[in-house]
Each structure stands twice: as structure tokens, then as C-alpha cells.
Length: 470
Image 1 (cartoon, rainbow, N blue to C red):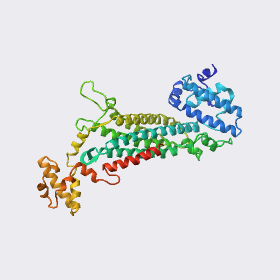
Image 2: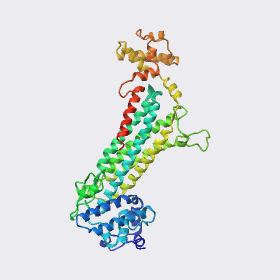
Image 3: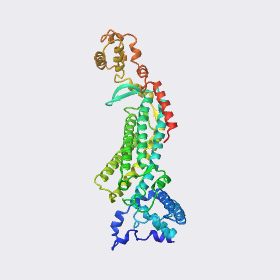
Image 4: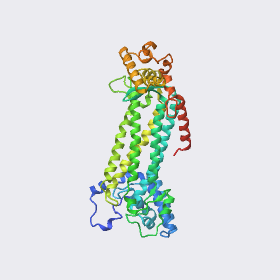
């Protein structure tokens, strides 16, 4: 068939200037079609909008426009059915589709590129693709947040030690801890939304770098494609990759959060902590030690943050010395972006699935919270309530803790007489303050760890999740 013959051709649209064919190795080395073909839907979408605008401006006839639009639809169907031969000599997704279109509909296909360049075309394709992917990622963040909210509500009264310096510090509720991760993800969600606003600017019509002499209507094309506006400067439009770097920075922060969360899951699921049990579906065994249950999913998620960080640095380095306007260097922007998106989407999905199957070992958590003098601050606050200055109270409690260390017991194991040796203002009511439940219940203010505050935070989060999916 004609289109099959053309996709195997070596003729390039820019070949008129050259007297020698491209070296075969150089041809393969410089081609991007092996990875940028995943932009085919967005390339076709942009081309169809461009054709409609050209027709409305009288640059294409209505019949040419219709032939282009229908021809591109047929090509999209062939690609999706696996009936499209991608050609390395045709270099990229744009030239492959344009060559196939010309083979499909004749000379009208050659007119499609009027008023544009591959420079503004690829920049538009990437923005269309990334805008869509950001929406998918934000939806995945919302799904994970929803799982955490359910878990927080279920474990609103479950007590475990809160840590600083990985040392037991004060009792907190597991629900409160889950809502801390919810808040981190909320910032990620907002950062991605901010980045999306700057992604949603259209380069098309900037042509190679200076704009075009044809009477195009860039606002028309931008409206068709759902962009907020066309880019205001043609030089900037074709050379800007800030939007990709900004997205990658937001992605790196999100990956860092998932890595931190994974580290806690790894620690908590160990025999030494035993706070949680991960489902077998998210763990593997050892080839030599039959007792092992390894937390491979959180470990891998922790590791994958490194590749996202690396891609961010790669994109920054890619752009750092480029003069205006477009340079071939920018062919290297796609693979890091593609991998960041694939890594994030996969990571968010498996994380939500894993957290949905997580089980809390409440007694182990409670036992750990009883170690390490986690209610020492409560005793200091109690003394302040009796009229002592906090610094004096701090010193008194420090001496009481030293006695507990000497006797290998907690503050709650000391008798009233022993506690009163450190301050005569201590009374029988001190033991209610020193309980784990009393400690967390006392933090009953906005943002505190008290069960009532956890449930209030859950209610607020549900309102957000229901009202602002994207």
C-alpha cells in the first residue's frame, strides 16, 4: 500500500539543502521516534486544531481541512491497532505522521505544516501530554489521600510513640500520624496544580523561532486545545522547558515524601518495631533465609525517588547553557519526563493499594509508647499548671527521669512519695496526666493529636477530597 511504502522511505522533508545522505549511524543516533511516538495522540490533536485554524483563516480550503482531519483520525486508529510502521529515517513522531498523512490523502497532507515548525509542534505536544499526565497524577494523589483518611479515622485512638531523632518523644495517635502524610500530599497536589497552570500555555504558531508570515489566529488554536492562552513570545515559546523542570521539581518533592513514608513503613514492619503488618502481596521472601518477609515495595519506592531526583538534575543541566532559541539538546527532555511520569503513576498506585491492606499492631504500638518516658513533657506541663516556671519544671522532670533510668522503670511506675521528692506540689492527680490516653487527650486543639482533633481533621479532609478532586 502507498502509506506502507512511504513510511519506509528515506526522503526527509528538509533534504533539499543537502547534497549527501545522512550517515546511517547518525540517522539512528539522532532519531527520537523510538521514544517520542508515545506523543502520537497529542501530535494528531494539535495538528487537527492547527488545520481547523488554517481553514478558518483561509489558508487551507474546507475540503483540504476535512481531508487532513479524517486522514489523521485514520492514522490514529492504525497506530492504536498496531498497524503503523514507525520509520527511523523519518526521525520523529511528527515526520512519521506527516509522511503517513501525505501518503493517505495526497498533496493536502503537505499543506498541514504551513505556519508551524517542528520546534513549536513538539513543544505543544509535550505540554498537551504533560497536562493530561498531571491530571492523572493528581487523581492518584487524591486516591492515596483517601486511603490515608480512612486509615486515620479507623485508628484515631491508636497510640504509638512519636519520634524526634528516631528517639521516643511523646505519645501520638496513629490517626494523627496518617493525617500528617495527608497534609504533605495536599501540598504535593497543590504544587502540581500550580505547575499545570504554567504547562497550560500554547507554543503553537511560534514556528521555528520568529513566528510566521501567514495570518494565523493563535488564540483560536489555543481555545480549541484547551490552553489558557498562547505563549506571548515566539523565541521563548519554542525554547522554554521551565514547565517541564517545574513539574519535575514538584515530582521530586512528591517522590521524597513517598520515600520518607516508605522508610517509616520499613521500620515499623521490622521485628524490632512490629507496629504494622504489610500484606504478603506487597512483600517478598529470601532465597536463602526461609523466615524472611522483606518489605520490597516500600524499599523500591524509596529507591525510585533517586531516579526522579536524577531526572530533575538532568533537565536542569540540559537547559543550563542553551542560547535562544531551540537546540537539538532539547530532544533529551522527553525520556526523563516520560520516566518521571511512569515512576510516579506506578508508585502512587501501589502505595495506595499497600496502605489499604495495612494492619496496625495496636498492642505493640502501645507497649512502645510506654517506653522512653514519653509522658515526661506532660509531667513538666503539670508542674507549670501548679505554678512552677517551665525551666524549673523541666529540671525537676529531668531528675525524675534519671531515677527511672536508674531503676529501669517508667515515670508511671514511681510512687507518689518518690515523685514528691522532686517537688511537693505533685499530688494524686498526677497519675491521670502520666497515662498515654491522658497525654494525647490533652492535645485537644486544632492540629493536635487528640482523637477528637484527628476526627475533626478527617472530616475537613473529606470535604476537600469530595469538593476538589482536581
